[in-house]
Amino acid sequence: MDFISNLALGFSTAGSIENLFFCLIGVILGTLIGVLPGIGATATIAMLLPITFQLEPVSSLIMLAGIYYGAQYGGSTTAILINMPGESSSAVTAIDGYQMARKGRAGAALAIAAIGSFFAGTVSTFLVAIFAIPLTKIALEFGAAEYFSLMVVGLVSSIALAHGSILKALAMVSLGLLLGLVGTDIYSGTPRFTLGIREYADGLNFVAVAVGVFGVAEILRNLESDRNRSVLITKVSGLMPTREDFRRMVGPVLRGTGIGSALGILPGGGAILASFASYTVEKRMATNPKEFGHGAIEGVAGPESANNAGAQTSFIPLLTLGIPANPVMALMVGAMIIQGIVPGPNVASEQPALFWGIIASMWIGNLMLLVLNLPLIGLWVKLLTIPYYVLFPIIMAFCSIGVYSVNGNVYDLYAVALFGLGGYLLVKLRCEPAPLLLGFVLGPLLEENLRRAMIFSRGDPSTFVTRPISATLLLIALAVLVIVFMPSVKKKREEVFQEED
Image (cartoon, rainbow, N blue to C red; front, side, top):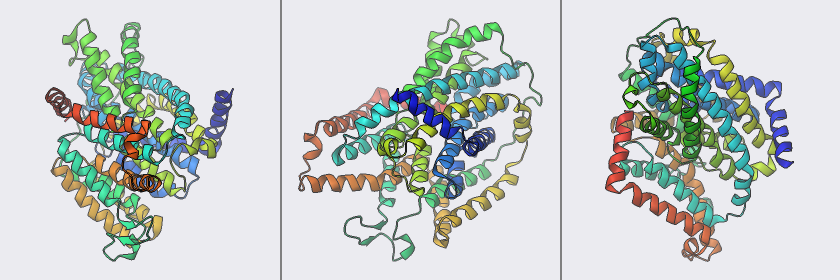
């Protein structure tokens, strides 16, 4: 009965006029930035963080969540129509989706992607609701040592699942941890690494860092490699899949949903890996593998279901443990902190309306996406013709005004410019900035729990290995490192990310 009453509370919260409005805004914005290649959910959410400061906590988080999973829908549109994935997780969809479009079946491909995404999003949201409370109860038993070890697992996993060199990913996490140390010591109150600037006594502004590393850096990268978008077709017809299409898509959708739901929980890039894993599974199970790459329906249905399921289940560690599974979830943590909410298991008990309202909004948002996406295909096609040089000045102005409005601090604008250039440099050096953001978000929490655990144990570091849960988590982190450095795994990992590039 508790589960039913909690869901009722969630739907009553998410179903209010205000929250329905912000959910609608979120999914439309998400689809829009998914359709426009080169912007991305991470950069968009980073830019919108300042606005959330003016909204109610539930409304702001519902909107940001809608942007995230809405972008998964929108990313498939460009992947199918112009062979340019709007989101990284839609890269696999482009392989067969674009070939279906070239054969005159763009409408069917888009419909298959939308239906698979809706089913996967609905099922995975149900999984979030089921596992939320049990995991929250387990998390309440965690002490400082267990939280420290859990964050170590999260950071190690983000290194293992990051694109490119593992050593570069390790360097990015380390840099993020160092940036998280800027500010005032939590116990002694002594300023550290502030360079004598009083405005940095509270640490670097999370919004400024996120907007710079993801928003500004992404704009600079796209200006450098702005490609002409050649839209294959200007009018999409035949949106209803045939009976044979439905027969062929059932299995891939079910398998993709299962794969995405499991991998989405992993820190790093679970949704991206889920789409590749689904494509690999479908190709190996196919009666005619040679069809893949030439317009196989399974090559669209499976990966699209997997990446949407992965996007939804990435909320599980955020809502239950307060640990971000990917850069977008790290931004969600930042949004919660801006609103004065401490991420973690206490959110479910202290603010149940917010906790269950976010979960219920995922169902509502997925329904909105299914209803809106297909009728608006014509609009998305027209938007693809907008030159990027028209968009970027508007985006830059929006970023600057938004960041300044949070604290009214000009040093935040300097930080945006500095981290924007730094983020662009990281891209040129083929260093993925996502681990940096995860390190920056988790760094202060990691330090706080490390020092608290050492105080409780009177300076005895063995507390991390003598407590069963903490020791188990550290062993998992060590196992992940050992596995990822194994020659066979390392080679396979390089093949996957090379394929994505």
